Image (cartoon, rainbow, N blue to C red; front, top):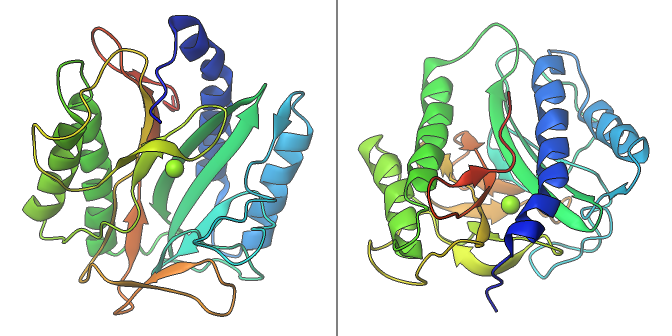
Length: 258
Ligand code: MG
């Protein structure tokens, strides 16, 4: 079922969105070569523990697309890992493409957002191009999130940016409705036909999350941890996500970073 939030409920979701945005901003400034993925996970754990009313929807999360509870506080996907990267004992290296996907519950509402960065000084231009494509696709998807448009207009806008940049799109995972639970209806595909699907209306709160891989649209799940999604051909992936609320006018980006 697709939930439509009241203006008051959208207002109540703001602290969760802001807290996620703040922690992601801190992490973006913090990551450097030599930093361990478990340190990042621990940092998020401490930030959540230090915030009254905050908890992690990840730790006990055990959906059908993962094996057992996730057991960590953030997804850290490095290089060929693109989604659901389970933090492990790994020191980041110069030039690693790191995607951070973070959801936190604050006062009963979930905030969810993701960003990708290249760690350190040796930034491969093709990695930067891939990241920018996910950011541009996200911006295009958000711009299409207006009342009167359909869900397919968001999907189409996202997919068009991918195709223009030469990337193909995997449709197995995408954006989603969000509220008291992290993943709700509707599913927001990263490609689709304009003018189709649910008609957007004020109070719809969704996550739009383009993720592309450089030279494939095929993925596999890492059998060692049962969670991490990797590109089938080993090429790097990137991921950008915001939680937005449809309004009468411009959408509100609830996870906007300063
Ligand atoms: Mg999400």
